[in-house]
Image (cartoon, rainbow, N blue to C red; front, top):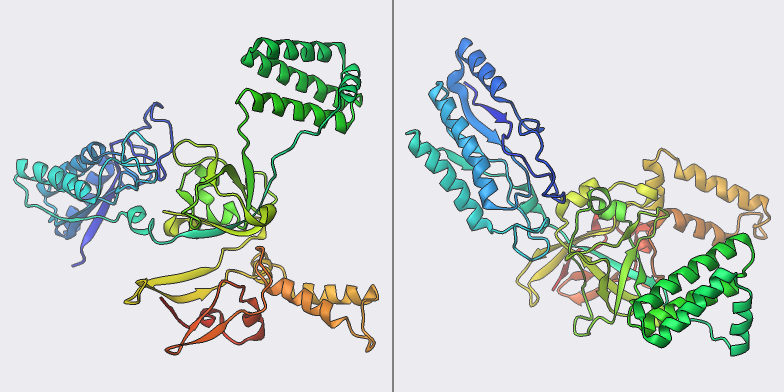
Length: 482
């Protein structure tokens, strides 16, 4: 006879899949969860099994109250309810053997180990196991029921450490520098303002003389807004508006209220690689992964490559609206500055799509080894190429390529043999074969080194290998040991 199981609904108000909500909000209907049967439905199942002579096959009870339970008290409350239902099923004649608590083991995303944090938990795996076992044992002992086999399937805790997302900051916005202005030019600028704006300027000047810093900020903001209004009406030029912006920044800097936050442009898509941040506000630890012997000198938010205004990260662990980072080299662009996002696990990979036609990033598989650095790169594959992304969206990249070549020929871009310029054709082909992300041009992709027959692929791009057919997607890196 087959063994049967049923999943029951939680009477304990469950936390969401990614607990980020306001704890002061009213609790949801305790019996409106998405998982399992209500008590009425459970009794109906028991009666049906009894009628067909299969009640002895009913052996497993499944129960799930969430995947990020903040405290063991809430966990024990839910598990105690499940244990009571388990014992009731035994009383009704079911041959119960297993109770599956579903999960609930949370992740300490911010390192606080506090149940007061929305992205942390106040316990570890041992406390979690102890709370579950104690709750079930207490109920079963009171009801004189044999202790069941206990199963847990805490997916979040299992997969959160599964992967690390590494991405590069390719450029940064520069701090604005207020343009210099002579006394004569300043007087000319002031005379071009409205009477209300001139009054704000005089009030700003007087407050600065008196040392009233809060008033300085207030009058500076008023002056800026009035000048913006004049600019919209066409009475001020862009140079005058820039002067006002610089003046307001100068005032803020002088009184210690100026805290410049840069924008670091990063080589990824938030929607593809960190969809939970965009969708439900889930925060993940994001830190630089090199230059760790240097003190971060700037603060910045992160902006992705997409043309979507939501493609930015401006909320970080600890309630911060910016991230302490190092200054980029090469005058703010192309300094090979890498950051890592941790605890994303397999969920982010599975949720990510092709928003704005950005596919997933390259994937490198790293395993433990006996080498000097205790790890080995066993596989590396690129993400979707532009052609593959287009194919996912039901386009035909081969036809598009031929159409572009034909248009190039019509525009006169042909060589002396009457064919489309070979360099142009190669460039077009590479555009389809490359990934949608930014890549640094390289002279070498795959370098074989005499390392016991192993192959090492450097950090340079390896699209040329893929285009030449020298290796399949899954074999572009044979093996790299460290």
